[in-house]
Structure formats: structure tokens, C-alpha cells
Length: 419
Image (cartoon, rainbow, N blue to C red):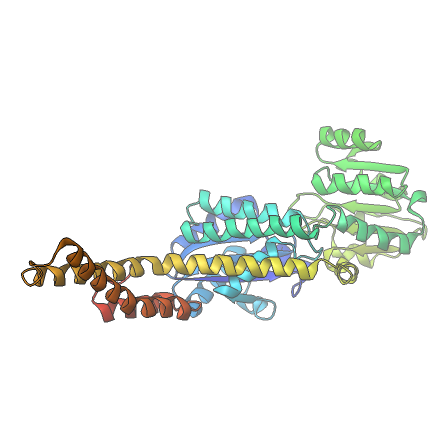
């Protein structure tokens, strides 16, 4: 069995495709049932975040596994296979391990070292385990990925500030609007990212801040913590009429802000930062005169420019490389352990059988002499087995360790390893 990962990320897909592929809480059971019904997939874990949608599978072979995991994405998310042709990537065996470890370390994120991705990787594994889709192999893989992510952040300091998206967006807003201290700002949503946005805008000097949310209680709670006004989404149009800056980050599955909500602005500019996946803001909003709309795709260039100056990237990649090697060696040892144990047991059986066969000829030996003969026999067998065992470990490259184990089993007449 081999590990295969396929996916779509911010590196090759726009927000529109990512939001169509994005999994909501109610979508996972269907996906895992689909994986369970596929004979080519033994285990599966789906990782769905604002930056990526990936499926990790334990499969019999690359080709059959790739087709199965791709069908899983297409059929459960209602996306045509042709739409995935260009942005879809895949990683196999050691490459899949390295990719997941890099993801967990934040090296493949739009914001290098983003802290949310580590918890998202852990949550993906827990959900798959609860659904019965992840067993020993992928659970071990994801636990090792989480350890890699923690180590990278602890040893290199690569972890980005949680409000990096907001900070990058606010910088773009300043370019469009001038000093944010003079801006009338609105935060739509009251969750984790919305709270970060509100606090960050305050730190930038924004004095006029309003929090809007479907739940008046949650809006009031966040407004109280940040010294802002609170309102409901029913106030959206009237609040937008006076706003200069809007940051939206809700958990809605549909459009929250549409072009009709803007109304007449008498030429005053409006900057909108959409941090949600799926998007909160209708893309048509960007076509309204005076409105600048930036979503996660639009933030990519700004964030990539910032990432270029991060000095801990090489150190973090070194951590990933070390953890990949550690995991791969342990995994292959687990795969080879049964045949190595059986091989050594076979050697012991041969020694015992030969000593029994020559018991009469050895009857006149003293206990010390008999012990020396037995030690010699065991030493000869051990040395004969040493080279095959070493070669088995060294030649057991990605995806072929089981084939080599079966060959050794056939050559020495022991039971082949179970699949």
C-alpha cells in the first residue's frame, strides 16, 4: 500500500474554484462513504481550508488511486474533471509525506507559517478517524505531520502572526484610502478572523468601527471587546452607505454583500476585503464605480512579496526534511519487520534442526564444547542472513518495500508478508 495525495491550492486555482471544492461539515460523511465504497482506496483524509482542498489516500497503486481520489473530488463537490485538469497536483509516497509535512509547517501557505493550518491538519485527521476513514497508516502520517508543524514553529520561529491576512489587506487599503485612522470601517462577521480584523484595525488607528453579524449577541460581544458599535446584517445597506472600509469574514455558504447593497456613494471610494471561503462578497461588487474589492486571490502577490524576506524558511525546510526521513525510515521498518522477524526465526529453526540431526555425533562433547558448537552454528546463520537483511532495508525504496519483502520470503521459504 502507498500514500497518495491529490489537491488544489491557492498556488494554481482561483478563489472561485476553491470555494466550489470547499467542504462544509455536512459534506465530509458523503465523501468518506464514497472512499469506503472504492476498492482502490484503503484509507482517506480530506483537508479543506481556505487555501487548499486535498485528499490523502492509502492506495494499491498510483494510477488507480489517482483516478479514485479525483472522482471523489469531482462527484462529491459537483466539479467537472476538465476543470481540475490544470490546477490539480499529486504527490506519491515520500513526496506525499513531504508535502503534508510542509503544509503542516506552514511552508505551503499563502502566509508562511500561518498557525491555523496546523490545527486544521489535526482536525482533518480526527474527523476522518471518527468517520472510520483513517486507520493506522494515515493516522500515523498525520500525527507525524502535526509533530513536524509544532517543531518547525518551535525551532525556527516561522509561525506567522494570526492576523497576517488582515495586515496585508489593511496595507492595500491604506494605499487605496490613505490613513486608516480617518476611515469609517465595518467588520462583517464575529468569528475568529473577524475578531482579528477588528483588533488589527484598532491597532492601525481606526476610530470609527462597526461590527455586523447575524447574531446580535455575538456582534455585541465582539463590539464590546473592541470598543466598536454593533449591528445586525439587516443594517448592512445603511452602514455601507457611510463606510470607507469593509472586512468580511463569515461562515456563510452564500453571498453576504452584493452590488445592490452599495447604493449611491457620490464618488467616495470604498475598499472591501473579503477573507471568506466561500466568498462573502459578490465578485460583481468590484465592478461598481469607486469600489476596490480584494479577496484571498488578490492578497497573494502582497503576501508572496512579504514571504520572500522570511529568513527562517531554509531552517524550517530542514526540519521538514529531517522529519520526513524519520517517518519514512520508521514506516518502512514497520512494513519490513514481519518478514525480518520471520527470516531470523527461520534461521533459528535451521540451527535447531541441524543440532538435533547431529545430536548423536555431539553426544561426547563437554558442555563447553557443545555450547561452542551451537554458538558457531548460530553465528554462521546470523552472518549469512545479515547481508540480505541489510540489502532489504537499503533497497526498500518508496513503494517497493513490500515487493522486496515478498521476494525474500519466497527465496527463504517463509510466509509472505500480509497486504
